[in-house]
Every structure is written in C-alpha cells, then in structure tokens.
Length: 121
Image 1: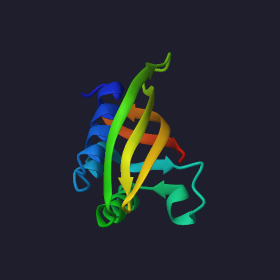
Image 2: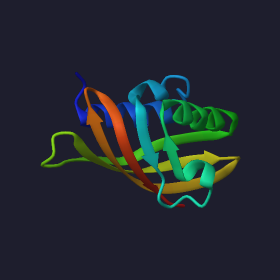
Image 3: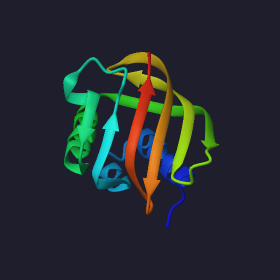
Image 4: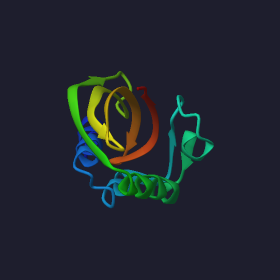
C-alpha cells in the first residue's frame, strides 16, 4: 500500500509529467476534490473518478508545461492525511505563471479519497 506522502508525490509528478491518462488512477472511485479558490463551477468540486478524469482530460487539451519547485510534504497526526506545499512554475496557454499551491489529501488504501487543492496565481 502506498503511503499518503508518496501518493502526493505521484500526483505532482503526474501533473508535471503531463500523465493526464494515468492521474485518475490515483483517486478512489468516489473521491471528492475541492478547489476552494476556483470561480468555475465546473472545477470547484469534482465528485467521483469520472469527474476527475474529465478534469484531467481538459488539462490535456491546454498548453500546460509546469515544473514543481520548493516541494515540502507535511505529515499530520492523522495517518491518512498529508499536506503538500509547493509552487508550480512554467507556462499555461503560452503565458508564464507562478502558482503557489497547498494540497490537503486524505489517502486510504493507497488512493486519494478527498483533496482540497488551494492554488493561486
């Protein structure tokens, strides 16, 4: 079984590596991902692996080229919860971006069951 910190690293590595087809397999069938800073109702809350798969499919259609910098993983007293703090740097749609982010993941049996992804530009 994969530890929560390793699942977080696989998630970030998958985004950076543009492994859009592989990323949904990191999530449980009934996983819920919340993007609290999103103003788009289509991405503010993703419920279920199918919705997460569609989210990553949209990312695959965008001109995304990120790297992750300053990655820090914070373990918590809850063995299922890990907090990942990092910065995406690169380009999105041909524009340079710097996007600080914090992901709060709950991982059960090696799969993400919930995530709150705080990212800003």
